[in-house]
Image (tube, rainbow, N blue to C red; front, side):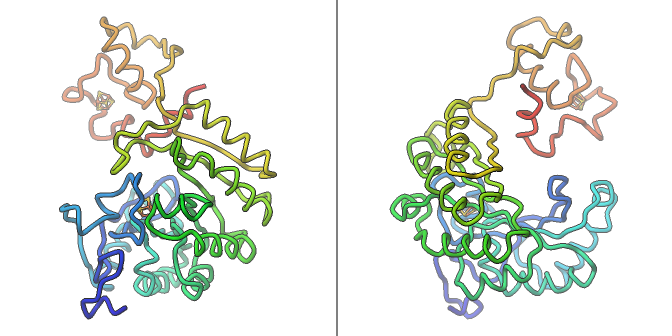
Length: 317
Ligand code: SF4
Ligand code: SF4
């Protein structure tokens, strides 16, 4: 399909368009977030960019290679990047593989500068493209949505066979490049798939890190509830029972502010409503109580601006 000439596939995109460039502390990388995706997952938490251009939001758009390289290089040289010790350039989306020839050109440039290359992907590509992906990337986050074709199709709109084939090749040919294989758990829709995915991975290599992440209501599943911590714990056990040695889980819902937040700052609040909100703020790092951002000396480097919201959960026993 010639997208440059105006032909369109499932992703509906022409030129590779960029949603944002940012520095990521978690992956110690400069991250390039592409618009568009070859899937239409019903739970997508990034649907306003993965389903672009149909969603009516507008972004940074197309940057030619030279301009994009210059913007990424500026970010790599920034104080923030220095502070988080950026050592890689990573690609996410949407789905970066739909822009692979363009991504490859970026990779060539930044590899020459000694940067590592990271990729977050749904793993949907031809075998030929996947070989190139495995060749070029230094680390990969791979998301499997379901094991059974029917369930995979109804969640994503696409068949599961290429995903399982590519996952198998990733594990058998490039095990050292796997940062994590993960599945977002949607209660009643794919929780029964976790054991099957875990078995598939364990049969190939039981040391592969597998992470299950709780779904949060979003997009077409906006009114569907997320999983409880109990269900997540049970599913982690199921995954381990299939032989996997490294299983983790996060972001269960609902998350409750713990009773254990009894710090001195809580005395600054009277009502139960304010106390509850303050617990979340304290966990996130807010230092100024009672809270007032307008008069806070930390306003320009606020510690409560979390890098990742799920950090909250790790602070709670
Ligand atoms: S593969 Fe990821 S980015 Fe694409 S629609 Fe699904 S959840 Fe969204
Ligand atoms: S700027 Fe940050 S630390 Fe200061 S009051 Fe606001 S949230 Fe709290």
